[in-house]
Length: 188
Image (cartoon, rainbow, N blue to C red; front, side, top):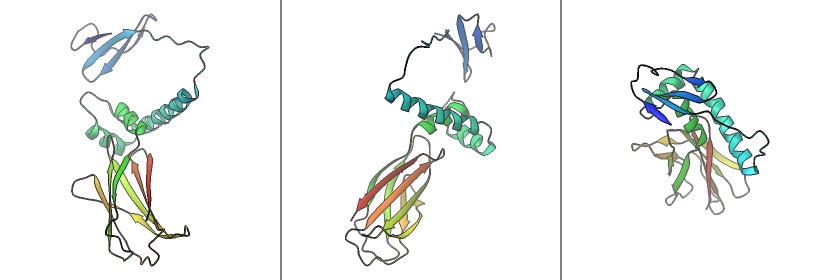
C-alpha cells in the first residue's frame, strides 16, 4: 500500500485501475492498494454472518447520515482528523453505548430522589431512559435521564411513590445517535 500526500499524478484520484490497483482518498491523502480478491465459494461462519449483518446495518446508517444535514453536522464535529462523515457514522453505528456504575444507594422509594448511571459511547450518548418496575413486573414510572455536568453521568429523578421497595427493578437504557441500545437492570 502506498500513501501520497501531494503527488500531482494521483492527487484526488480514486477508484480502480486495470483491476490491478485501487486508489482511495482519506482526508488529504491518496492511498494506492492492491486490487481486492474474494473467494466466491467461501461460506461465512455463524459469527461472521452476525458481524456482516451488523456491518451492513452500520453501512445503511452511514448512507442515511451522509444525506441528512443534521447528521452531517454532528459527525463532522465528532469525526477524527482525516475521517469522513461516512466513516465516522459507520464507526458509531458498529459500537453501542456502555452503561456502568448504577448508583441507587440512597433510593428509598420517595419521589424526587436521583438515580445516577455512567453512560459512555465511542462518539456520543444521545439519550438515557430509566424505568422502575414493581416486584410483580408492573411499570411504576419511566422517563428520560438528564445529562450531568461531566457529560457521562446521567441522572433520573423519581416522580412516584414506591411503597414496595424490595424486589423493585431499576432499568436504564442508553441510546447513541444510530439508536444502538444498551440496557442495565438492577433488582433491589
